[in-house]
Length: 425
Ligand code: ACO
Image (cartoon, rainbow, N blue to C red):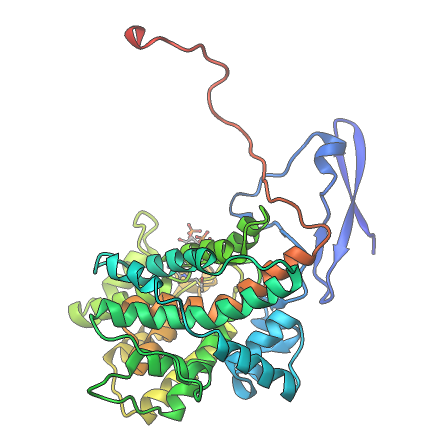
């Protein structure tokens, strides 16, 4: 098989090398294209563009495969914890028992946030969306925790701080938005249990940890921990390429994740399902989703890369059934979701467009069962995605070929035009 492709342009022939990944996927290396031919490529939305090489996550959208550092997400969901998966992503391999203990100690030691940060929370308008608050607060962390001199120590410290403090910041935003007393992290609780306790413990009603709920949250976060070069991760890498600090890069990722076409879909799914329950208009919703003139989309359906079932969705659906049964919850949204899925999967429009439920389709129902309010859903996604963002940022920093991200464009505006003074316009 040839290791280059030929490009013929204006009578000249150019050879563009083929790069092959460890799972056999291939790319044309166009790094010298402009220099050699004067041409650039145009790929709006980057659907055909690899922005980097990466050793973190492998996904195959046609086969429905997702692996972190080579390990199938199904195995991690069954055997790992979120903390261990975070270590795997950030450090590139599973930790030994001793390393995991050390990691837990560091997370615990860094779990408090500066008391002065509470003043920010108290001054956000009550109606602020928690994603906007989280993005601002993460960016603000740099002012409270300035740079260390040693780069290696700085990176390790920043990474641990972020992983630990984001969880505290998220729980704080919930408590403050409700006008309730903030609950501090507890050293005796592990990562997911600690978060649940900070969210739901109250002086008048102590929170009772249920191990199935703790496990469901841990799995929820494992399933969201990385997804290679998606919109928010690309934002983290792109902003990071200007060599900003990690907090600023992650803040950009949180802002990107907020969008309803990306992480915001989990909130949008619940809103859509609730409206179907309320208005009993399933058929109308499906017809609207199929109407090309109508911008409405079936939220939680479709994916840029998966053209078959999203493997995370299969695990999420199973977990959703198990958790609701255990908690003896009958959620009408689950019945509607299953009915909608069944109808859509038999419909020619969804079949011909390769539209299958994605991870967000059932994740909101799991979060509702845990007690998470709808406007916090995307924050939950952000906490889960944090190790992936950090791993990707770290990888780009270590990559000698990683440059300032600066795409080009094809200009389609007016040709040179003379300035006209205001009284002659
Ligand atoms: N409902 C109805 N039609 C859809 C949907 C949907 N959810 N998604 C895509 N389509 C249709 C489009 O209308 C288009 O149809 P056409 O070719 O007949 O005009 C075709 O499928 C391709 O759509 P694109 O927008 O080009 O596909 P893209 O790969 O850009 O979209 C996306 C991916 C944004 C996820 C899209 O499927 C969508 O909007 N889904 C709903 C939002 C959602 O669930 N987002 C979460 C994604 S997972 C995540 O980020 C964690």
